[in-house]
Image 1: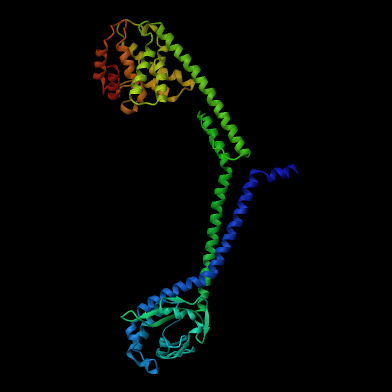
Image 2 (image 1 turned 45 degrees about the vertical axis):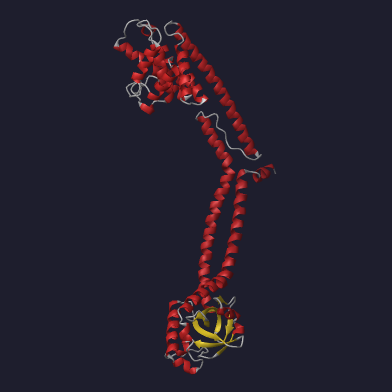
Length: 464
């Protein structure tokens, strides 16, 4: 019993039930469309098409000429009758759906109309079995009341009607003379037997709609399944972000079911890991900061260098409009930018005389070493990048990667200026400290080659 209940409440069952319900809806819609096509396509669409044909044909008939045809048997021999008869046959030949085409005129009697031109009986050698209509032959319009509207605008029978000509659907349109007066009406008939061809077309459309219905069912099924399985996909995506150290990522959570509760628990776990990593990084950063201070404390000439560089860099960042978050990141990177010097022998660092080529090579390794020291701690990648790049030159001749221009991180370019200024204005065992103005002039001379020109300009403004 428990297994049955578990199966009924399973995720797979939900998808199955949703899909079955979807198929039922699609089938219902499909049947409704077929019904509408089978009823409306045979009546409404035929009426519209026939009215268009009738209206177009009426425009091709000369109203002045048709008014000159006598409404008796002699009318069939007139040139006007023959001319219009030829035109009507051409119209019929051009429209395969038309079985009969003719013109009629209203009489004083409301329901009695008279034929003017019916091309069938005038055809050479005609042996039609249907009733014929000659000029003047009467017609009782009560069988087709829509013809009464043809004195004003095109109209069509709403249902199939029958008379001595057969069982058909008819449409009518007014014929006007050169003055715009209605002088007659043109009628076109489609026999009911011709509707069989339309039924075949409707059948084809029904098959097409069925196929489209199946396609739509599949697409809607995928959409619904996607909505149902989205929480699982969100959790999978969240797991990937966690694996990529993106611990502040949150999965989308909606509803109160088990999947939503799992999503909330996942977000809570990720937040806890984020806070733990932040604390761990802060601890490691403080350790690194302490190591840098210990390194500088061994040499009175470099004592406080990193803190001063951090101060100058922060001032430059504010002057350049950086956000407080970016300034804090800049300050952290500046405070530990020389961490790589831990791996350099003190004799080289504190040498009073000039350095040999080999010693210069060792010194130039400290930015890359600093990045490697920080990498295991999983600190912000940008901090590691800035520490590695703070000795790159704007003209691409710096070290360790010979980056140039905008390829150098902006924070690293700022630290480069602050670091150079503090180095020039600090006392060293091999030279005296430069005056402030002298150091600023050196920065100006290096603008565009060693330093970013805009960074130098902002720093000079600050120091002035």
